[in-house]
Image (cartoon, rainbow, N blue to C red; front, top):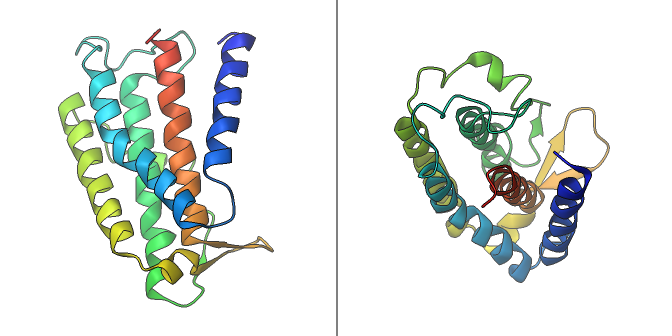
Length: 180
């Protein structure tokens, strides 16, 4: 990854952050939802350019394979079960610092999934997340989450904002790595 590549990704992420600020608004939530809605189709489009033989190979030397990237997306999506869903169900739940790579990746849930299975699994997990988010009322977006070991409280909106920016960053990186 060249410095100009990193600079371009960072510049585009900075623009996305302006459209999805840290303070909740309906427009900001809508912008975050727009990214979340488009991610499965974007992954499908990118996957169409990757052969079955290249699926598990690094896209660039020293970088993730497309398979590893899809597994990462699924592990990130799984964090919704321990962060945003409890915030809706319980008043100010305390959530633990579970990391998608460091912790969920160790579970090796998707090791034997094919490209088609990983894409379908992500599509279904994201559909559940979107069903949940579309049903939220305006005050629900601001329901609090307390992360163990952190002083500040987060909200459902804050976590969804982070998820959308995460998706956007990884899609940018994939496109740059593949010269798309």
